Length: 192
Image (cartoon, rainbow, N blue to C red; front, top):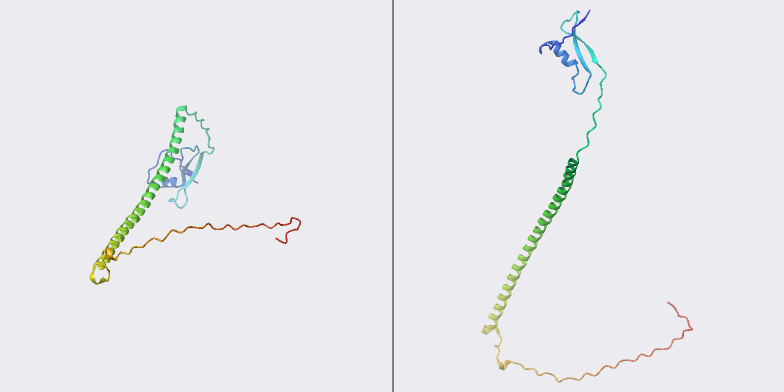
């Protein structure tokens, strides 16, 4: 039959039993109290290359320990934690305010730049129109001074003097007098 061999000391890494033990045994966790061990079994049958394994359970009942209650925090530590929460809220509010002010400033600068460009364009147009107006006035004066324009120079002989008309008296307008006809209160109105 088969005999179980239990090894207490580690086996070399190149042996077949260690390979089989690593594949069949679950890994131990630090918090678990149950442990399994795999013991290779020699088989006296036909194929000695394939060793069999038996799993023996050392302990199957995990024990649960109750954690100790956390001691209350000191007052100074609680105050520091509350100060940290408060400073986080204040920091968040300051960041939001900073972003809003920055966005408003950038928007106002862009708007101001746009309006300033408009102002400069309008001032340039005004200067160009004034220059064009003066050029036209100069051309008209030059045309008027030329001898073949047909215009006469201004002299006191060519001045026309108009006399003012005599003052007229204004008669007051007659105010029409409206006579109100008496209406009888006994008769109902004819319609609405």
